[in-house]
Length: 102
Image (cartoon, rainbow, N blue to C red; front, side, top):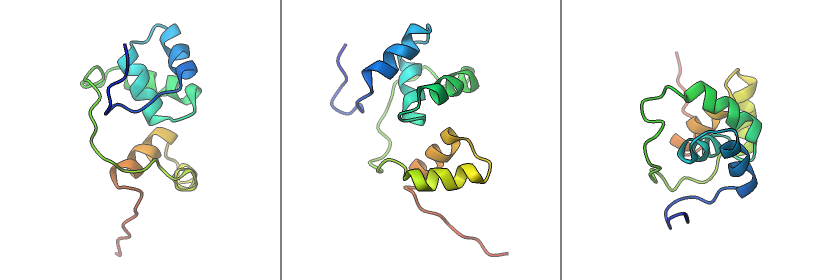
């Protein structure tokens, strides 16, 4: 099966590693999207999200946002967020922060 034109490319070794653990391909791809370049974090993501109602839904292109800036991911991790949470938040906000005053 070849990826569609709108589907991102995945590291074949990372994808094979997760599939080799018995996870369905769609779940592996979602885990790798949430944790780019980090298959260990992707495994953790799979266990944390295995009961998500949309875990087996097809991938859809929701945004043309660039990948999350690693420095911004690190800053959010320092605040106590996981890599997956930080990456998702930055992707959904296109890497911007909104500062609220009290």
